[in-house]
Amino acid sequence: MSKDSIFISDITVECVVGVYPDERTRTQSLHLDLSLRLDTSLAGRTGRLDDAVDYARVADEIAALLKFREYRLLETAAEELCAMLLSLHPTVVNVQLGIEKPEALIGRARSAGVRVSRSNEDYPRRWERPEFGEVEVVYESLEAGIYLLHVEPGRQIPPHHHEVMRELEWVASGELNRDGELVQAFSPVAWPMGRTHRYENNSSARATVFCCDTPPFIPQDEIVDGAVS
Image (tube, rainbow, N blue to C red; front, top):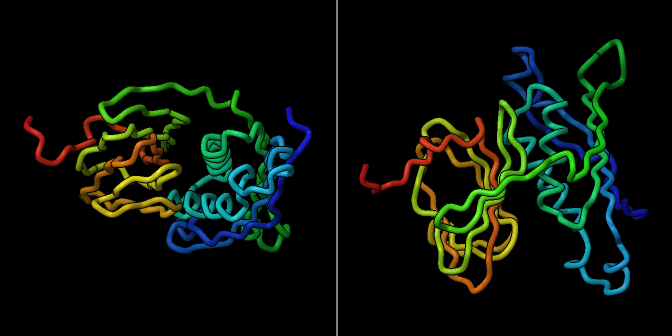
């Protein structure tokens, strides 16, 4: 394991979290401490952000997933966050994550939470090969799935919608046309059920979409618009 790490202290995210009825109708604060183990020497030599892990991007990715998922348990949040970060930042070999919930034990403790340490070995991958390229299945649980959709040059994820799954997506690398608009930078979108969306890769390089589905991917709920049954 690398002897180097980068860290972010006290990331604060307002989101829906908790199992009790009153927690499902309001937001509350979560505080996260994060350490990512990786070799930082290349970035140290080149001074290039492309050779480093962007702190701001990591914090934005964490906030996007927490707000979308509206977790019941911190343990579930920790597993999915670690799986996401390891998949999106391939130079990272280990994630150490602490999540604190200040309102967990009001009047009895200042805070409560979880701390976990996860590496790539904790999330064995599998691959599927649809017409647009490749799907990397990063992590699936009873509640949700995390996937990387690799779209080859000249290919497209055709117009489709979902009637059961909620879906969070953003372009993780490369450039794609999303519903006719060029998307390069981090620009997350939570697709409402029934909303048609599509991606086209008109570039000369592979592009990748991060995707979180809840519940995990249901093949029959990938409803291609205009398809003949």
